[in-house]
Image (tube, rainbow, N blue to C red):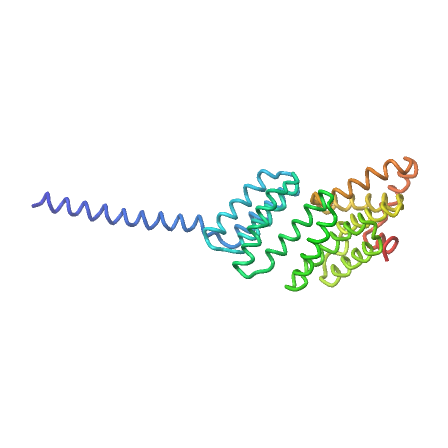
Length: 282
């Protein structure tokens, strides 16, 4: 009898701790899957920084982790942001097949959630890709789609940045007046949104425009200031945006003699974003 009671007692103890361990295990799984809102966002932020630094492998790994978290927790925002991050990574290798797969997922997410921002991001990322490849008609079409949606849903940041982006298309197609208007609008929107007035990023579009217009000395001056400010502000331009800057630097190096170039570079140290805009754009 005593042996029987001891067996029952042992069974109850094991059952108790087994249940407790199971509950704890479930809590640990839940804790692993359902991160605080800041944690996945931090991972995405790190993924973007890694992308800017050229470390696509680790950037993609982080974005995929967030994508998994988003799917397991039914968090559409995390899924959309992760897919958008992966779209960006596809640009470096000009992987249009991967971009098409990710685009379809973003469109499906937009349809299922009723949130137009995901189809907006899809359009923006496709525009960037096709601009990199050099198909300006496709790029223009996607930028137009992105801008229409961003304006409709009040995504002011995207609406602003696509004026800058679309200016490259206009410049490439020889429509310099439209390019100039788009760059002006970009800086006007920045001012309305109270963004940093010393934004060197927008100057890339100006340098590209000046080179295409044949103002090589102006293009050298603007591109020199861009590089100085990027270094001071620790800014890493994305591939679609650095490509025209690299073009300007290579082109002007061949078209302006070294003495004149050195004089322009020395003079540029006193220039700011606003002074260059007043000199060449406004």
